[in-house]
Amino acid sequence: MEKFKARPAPDHPRLVALAEERTRVAEARAIRDAEREVRRQERLAREAEEELRRVAEELARLEAEKLAAEAAILAEEELKVKQKEARDARYAARKLRRR
Picture 1 (spheres, helix red, strand yellow):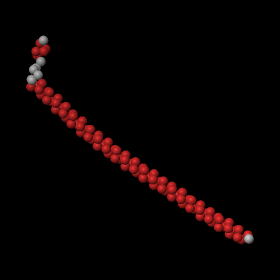
Picture 2 (cartoon, one colour; picture 1 turned 90 degrees about the horizontal axis):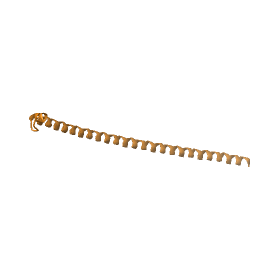
Picture 3 (cartoon, helix red, strand yellow; picture 1 turned 90 degrees about the vertical axis):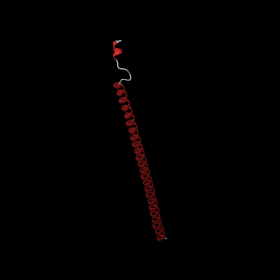
Picture 4 (cartoon, helix red, strand yellow; picture 1 turned 45 degrees about the horizontal axis):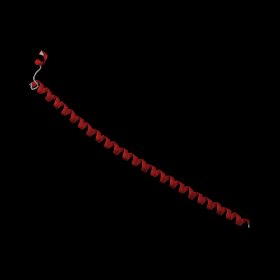
């Protein structure tokens, strides 16, 4: 009972000051948490933009490689056609000489 009576009243200035300090600390913590969340969201947005840019560059690179490969195939086919025409011309000339 003595211990209970020795406690200060809830409206004691020291207890009021402690409660106010706790409130200020909690508010400051909430502000820091909100700022941290904003920074995190900004970082995530930057990372998403970077990933989008990287994927777009990769797609452009793949498309360029595909076009280059198609051009190489067309050039090779064109070369084969020219070689066949030359071979056919030689064959025809040889055939004409034998007559």
